[in-house]
Structures are given as C-alpha cells and as structure tokens.
Image (cartoon, rainbow, N blue to C red; front, side, top):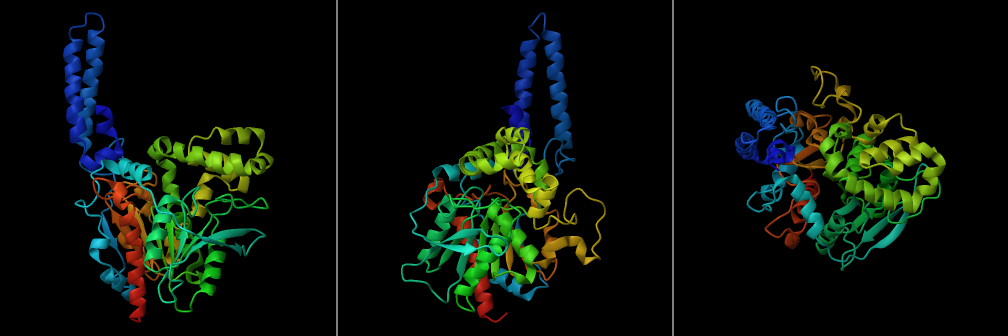
Amino acid sequence: ACMVLFTDTMYVQEYGRWNGGVLLCTTTMLAMKMAASFSFYGRKLMGSLLIMLLLVGHLFQKSGSSGIYEDPGLDLTTLKEGLYHSSDNAFMSRVAEIWPKESRTYDPQRASPLPTGDARTGIPFLVNKSSYQEYHRLWVKSLVDDEAVAIDIAFPTEGHSVTKPVYFVLHGLNGGSNEEYVREFVVRRVKEGHTCIVMIARGLMDTPVFGWDVFHGARVTDVHASAKAVQKAISENQVLAGVGYSMGAIILSNYVARYGDSVHLDAAMAVSGGLDMRENLNFWRSMRLWQPMLAQSLKEDFIIEKFEGRFRQRLTKEQHLSLMRATSVSDIDIHGIVTYFGFDDLLHYYSEMSAMGDTTAFQFKQNEMTDSIAHDVGRIANVSIPFCVLHALDDPLTTHRTMGQDPERLVKTGSGHTMMLLTAGGGHVGWPLGLNPAIEGWKWMNDAVSGFVSSVHTARMEGL
C-alpha cells in the first residue's frame, strides 16, 4: 500500500511523493529491524530492503519537476488549470468575459473531498441518479450510405422555444439518451425551456444497422447529417449548440475540426474527450485499471448481443478469438474496429478519430517546433465556431496529454475560435460537488456547458 501511494501517478499528482515516501521508508526500516533477527535469510532480506531505501531516495531526489522523464515512473501534468482563449478573437474574448467565473471554476471549497481523479470519476457513476425524461424519437437518413441514426428529442413543458439555444448532444461510449449524465443534462436544460436532441450513435440503444457499417469513433458523417436536419428544422437565427461527453466529445471535436465552416452547429463544447487520442496509446494506467470495465460492457452489449454475426463474418477465427479475449478498449479497437473497418493499425484509427490526429505540433515528444507554417497545426485550425474543450487534468481514462502540450498556442490556431477550460481536478465526466455527490449530481459539469452556450448566445445577441 505504501508503495502504491509513493508511485501512483494520480495520488502523487494530487498529494506529492511525501506521504507515501515517509510511510514506505518507515515500514522498510521496521522490516530491516526485524530482518536483523533472522539467522538464515537476514542478510539477503536486509540487502533487498536497503536497495528499496536507496530507490526511494533516488525517486525523492528526482521529484520536483513534472513529466515522465523528470519524475521516473510517473506522468505528471505540466499543464496549468484555467481558461484559455485567443485575445485576438474579439468574439471569443467577449464570450470569456460574459461567462461568469464562478460557473467555470471548479472551486475546491465546493468540490467533493474525494482523493484523486479515480474517486471523482467512479463515485459519481455509482451514486448519481437522474430523473425520468420523456423523448420523442425521429430518424435521420445518412448522407453517405443507406443507414439512418435515431435522434431522441426532449421538449420543454411549454413547448419548443424559437429564441433559446437548442442543444444537440452526443453521448459516451456504449451510451445513449438514457445515459445518466446525459439525461441529467437534458432534464436541467428542458426545465430552463431549451429543446434538447440526443443523437444515438449508429447501432447503440438497440437501434438497427442494416449493412456492415456499424459504429466506430472516426465516423463524423452521422453527426453532420443529424445536425443538418436539426438546423433546418429550427428558427433561422436560433443557436444550435453541440455538446459531447467522453467518446461523444472526441467525435464532436473531430467533426468541428474536419468540417470547418461547413458545420451545421453554431457552438460546441466537448467534455472529457481528447483532442489527440494517439497520446492515449501509452496511457497504460487507464488500460490496466479503467478500460477493462468499459471493455467488458462494450463486448457484451455491442459486439456479442448485437453484431457478433457481422464480426464473425469479417474476422478470421483467430482475430475473433483475440477480440473475445480483449481486456481493454484499446484491445477491442485493435482486434475489432481496426480489422473490421480496414484501418492500417491502431495509430491510424486514432489519428482519424482525433481533431489533432493529423499533426505533431502539440505532442509532448517532438523535435523543435516552428510556428511559421499554418498547416503544421493540422485540421484543428479549421474550427470556425465557438468551440470549448472542458477537461480535468486528473482524468484517469483520457490522459492530459490528449490536450496537447501548449494550450495557449493551440487556442490561437486558425481564426482563434477554440477555447480550453482545464481544471486541476474533476476526473472523467465527474466534477462531483459536496460531501454527498448524489445531491447535486453532475451539476457543475452540465452547468459549465450551459454557461458557455449562454455566453455565446449573449455575445451573438450583442452583434459581435
């Protein structure tokens, strides 16, 4: 236990090495004292414990600077929390000015006293519950094949408002419109008079897929078709705001980057979704601790119960066996998605999935960067609408490295419409509040989204 406290990235990022180091040294010295009384194994055991003490001292000596190389065995973030936006973009500067600081600050005084991003992620999922929400389901025809995706629409009690922003929501991996944090967001916004539309990812929530093209995370054409249909249905000057959570956030980010000024959204906010998922390829902690739980659910609900026949036909027996034995989401992507859809490899798939997947300009491991050539920053420079990325630096599923190593430079790419809100704590789709997180649920996270969209709407009304 002492060794875990001394070497676990999340714990050390939160509290430093001191607590675990002192406990580890104390227990080691007590063990050495006991080893001295052993006649046969005493010297060998004493030598091993001495080596452990020297290792602890070495790690203490190396501690103090952040990064995977400066602090051996750890991947501590060097990013600073705060709101990043381009001062050269007058509209985004105005949005930042309008957005109340208290609604975009994860105040430690209000935050739940849970230790590390693991607890801030897991506890809300265990204890938070959302109210019932009635939806009306419609279908949107794909623009590129013969499939269709479902959209679940929630209307306010008083009916659709033609003046308030409409929310277009993308749910998380293997989720849907009844995903707890999605439904809570919808319930809150509907009470405020907003219409909310949740796009159901292809094949999820038991929706049909007639051909071979089941869901994968790099497809953005369904989002484009659905947003286009919704935008056509609402009032001409009404704000249509995209909101994405987790996998939905990754897809939304990729969509606004790839489609540029052709997007059918007026604003977008991505919550706990990486901009460069290639960085998650080396996030071993997530693969060992969190991804196995997601992978099991994904295999049972998506692959085995729904599309196993398709996977069996497209994969060889060996490939299908490897898919069934997959213990992480990355393994499923390797043995299932990459092979099924013909991606070159996992790196290619994650590159296609990511808003910053076509550039190395913001990666942590790279050569000297140059700022002179615009295409160096890739498609993220195409963002043409107010786009905010909300991410906790202690996210245990999606590493902080997916945010890039230079937020200040990133928000200035292209026309400067990208904004980043980074918090020191919060976990993955978490940000719990109070001693009992169940009381306020995902209020901070979901109110941060509405605060950003409301600020964009106000700035538009001012004619900026």
